[in-house]
Image (cartoon, rainbow, N blue to C red; front, side, top):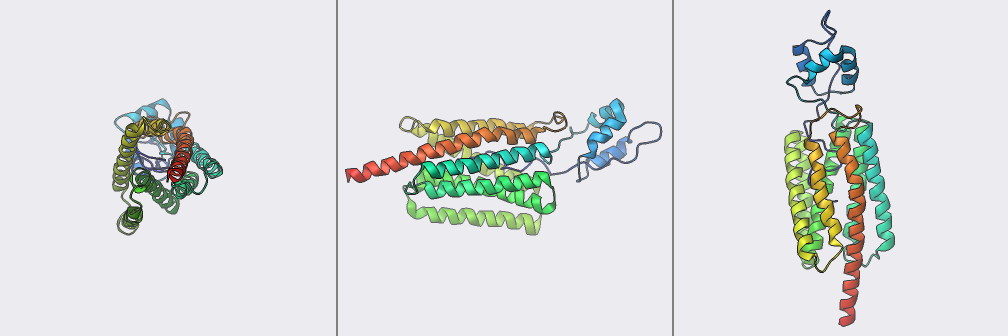
Length: 293
């Protein structure tokens, strides 16, 4: 699915988490401001924030919100895990539907099937990461999400330009694979830079979004089904704004990242529906061209 922000499991920040707050100062029932600030700025688990807030009560809650960013889970909790699972199931079910509806002779068949498997793999690791947050599952989640973003660019290239220039498909694919290898190597061997990873995925995602949208608008008169693709890319852009919001998790479960994951489930289904319609159109167009020859 075309993406405008990092893919399945990538949060919007530095991946930091809350740690258990230090013992409260005597008589106040809350941690002192300096100790609280240290706790909020350290990367570790967030779960104890809820218990700490409940124990400290209103006074501590006010202090936590005063001059500090609103605490978020950034998706590392059951809601995002469940939403990732739903996205993975949606991608897998739509992959089966695509293979059942589209003959392998369709020009886009191998590219669409490969994209679906890359997406299923990414949502699987997103589910694992949000279920068990470790250094390994975090990297697998982020790297697989980057693969989805780049494969979406590849899908867009093949559909909009590659079918007319088949000799260049392999060259463009090799370039994207080299970029992905360099991206992963830098994050693994040099420094795991959240800011760089976010910037790279956002830039590529926005390029992909604008590319798809330009193609949809240009071909709308002769390809009625492109409205599905246009709706997906526009709603993805709107839904991506959820990642920029800063609000306490609803019911201490649904944060902005979880809502972003939930919003992509129906968009997954709609985009695969577009791929089915478009692949069948290309198959018919090739058949008509062969009959004309």
